[in-house]
Image (cartoon, rainbow over all chains, first blue to last red; front, side, top):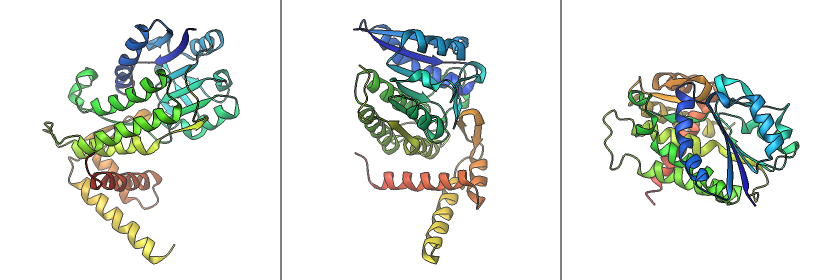
Length: 218
Length: 73
């Protein structure tokens, strides 16, 4: 049976351009996997209408949202709210991973009440330490690399069929590894290492889930 | 809150402030819909006694120090 995966990844400002870059690896992986189907709501396709339409018609097992967020919503293209209390029931029986600020705080809990299997996200702002000279080429930004690795570890674990709790555990290990080792053998001309470690610890601290920890994408 | 707890919090705040003051003030972190936040702005949040964001910064920085103190694995 083909597993269905849905991703939203707007790309209209510096923040979303980094998240968009972080998602490239998993999109490539899934496109090369015959047993999976991907619906890629990229750029200006990341709208509320398209998300609702795909959730209803395609019934994906795993939904990966990239974009701005707050305690009660997740955004899409140009920060249109694409998921909130009014339509989160459409993610019933699905696993949702929101790579966005704050949304686990309220929307995560509400989603579980409305039937979402598990909701993974952040209980505070999501931080990325970047190199401002690389804003137009996030894929070449060394400062952002440990953040990219952690984000990939989480979505790759979920896509691989690990349980949500195991995926989070592995991601936290990745964060810890980067915090402990970053900068020990790298050039750091701007002295950004302490701030990179701080931002990684921030993301480690506020990554969490609600719902069924044993849920998996199958 | 006991006076001992209060002193610990103050000590942690002082430590975190001193560490942030060694960084480039203009260095920035991307912070979602907030845009960017500079080291200087982080310091202001820490200095503001009733700032929940400042309290989180202290909590996270202390956690980071504990992680680093626990060694490379």
